Structures are given as structure tokens and as C-alpha cells.
Length: 328
Image (cartoon, rainbow, N blue to C red; front, side, top):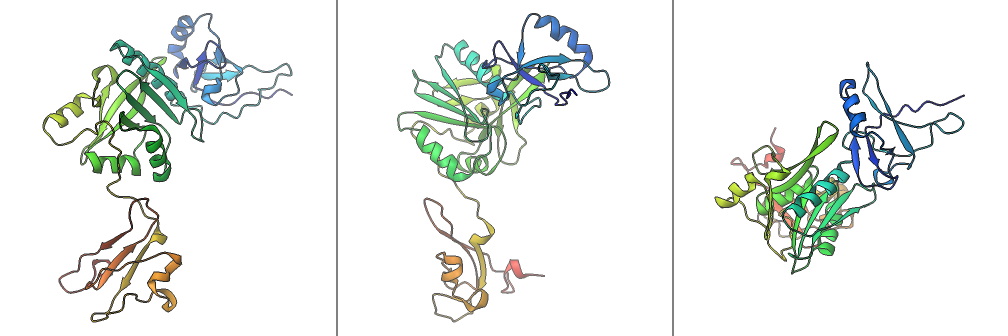
């Protein structure tokens, strides 16, 4: 008994199974004829750079559901085994970004070396661009990272003689810290246009929605990637670019719930520790060092493993002498 391929595969590569030339399948049947004529004679593959099995794909037309690619059946009539995780319209965005950024940079007379990076989730985790003549590096970070992983990559990729730009595929703690640090963060996304995807570069700025610009509206300067919106922000002095050799340090860092303790210190107490759960001293709480704010009745003690510092954050005291966290 044959097994039908029921996966809705919307992206593929053309050429060979290891190709980095992406294509996106039109979802509507009225676009399929044009798509087939445009790629007549081409073979579509569930590419290895998409995390796919490397087997050949066919085009499937439907009137009542989304058109999509499907795997050719094997000799027994069964769909081949494929462990590809991402099949949607954005599943080849790393390849579209690699292709379009390379073309865009070369159109400006810039020689570039582009590399896909597998950071543990898939071949589309990140795309690196290295510009040897100007000593500039662009990292398009498409998967989420925690602070430690990002900080380690920041140290490995950046040197005092290089200019480094991070462009994020989604918002998160790292991009938020970058906004706090330099006033903005660069973002990237792709939008479907026919059988292609357009690369857009965005600027994340406090109090505003992300402002998106087409890639061909952007420019690469000695200080980094600049969009029309970023150019305006730089001209009025509301943000600053990073510059060469500057390692970004976070303005804040996220804390887990077990790294924050709220405790009351009785007025007049001179002790340097005070009880928490079960009468245990705070500085023994869960094995972490804790610090209190002297002469302040309520303190929020944050003790984490941030690579630069431990911090104790004071809570403001209300006029009636109570902590805002304890008001009803």
C-alpha cells in the first residue's frame, strides 16, 4: 500500500540537492502556470541546506487547498523518509538573505564572503557576511539565543580592528538590550513576492513599531548597515552607531525567578543578613551570594551569574512607608 506525501512543502532549491538557490512555491493555482513556465526544465529538491532529505520534489496543483511541493514516491510508491522540520514560506529565508545580500553588496563594489551557520537548530540559524577590504562583518541572527551564547559569539566574531553589525530575525532579550545600549537594533524579515522572497531591513527603536525598508534602499557605510530610517535617527543624534572594535555590553540582563528575592529588613537592625524561608539567612538562600541595600526597609536582591557584575536593585518606598510590591 502506497503512502501519500501529506507535507505542505512550500520551499525548495533548484540545481542539485546541495544547492543554495532557493525557490518558493506559489500558493494560489492561478500563479502555478507562470511558475512552471519560468522554471521549465529545472528540477526541484528538498535541499540539504533546508534541513531536507535531498530527494527530488514535484509540483502539486490544488483548487481547494494551498498548492505545494511534494516528494516523488520511491519504487514502492511510498513517500521517502524526510526529517525536515521547517516547510513553510519562511523555511528558506536564510538562503534568500544569503543570495540577496551578496548581490546587494557586490552591486556596491564590495567583495564579500557569505557563510551559512548551523548553531544547533538547523542550517538556517544564522548567515555571516565578511567584507575583507573594509574589515566589516554582518551577522544575520535568525534563531533565538540566550545571552551567554550570544556573548560568546560576540567575542569570537568581533575584533578591535573590525566593525560588527548584528541583524536579528525576531525580537528578544538580546535585541532589547541592544536597543537600550545604542538606541536601536537592526532587524530582518522576508516577504513573499510571486515565486520569490524580498529581504527587508528594519530598525527597532523605543516606543515605535519596527520601521522596515527594502534592501535596495539601504546602504553600507564604514560604520555599518544603514536604512533610511536609521539615517534620520543618526542625523538628529538620537542614536549612535557602534563603531569598530566596540563590544556591546548589555544595559540590563534577564533574571530567572529563583535569582530574585524580596525580603523585609526591620528598621534599626544592624545585622548584615536577614532571614528568608525557614529562618535561613538570605546569604545562604539557594547557595547564592545576596546583598541588601542598607537603611532601606525593602530590597530586591538579584544575584546571578552575569559575567560582569552582581547587582542589588532597590525598590522605591511608598509615601506611607510600605513597599509598592506589598500594597493591596
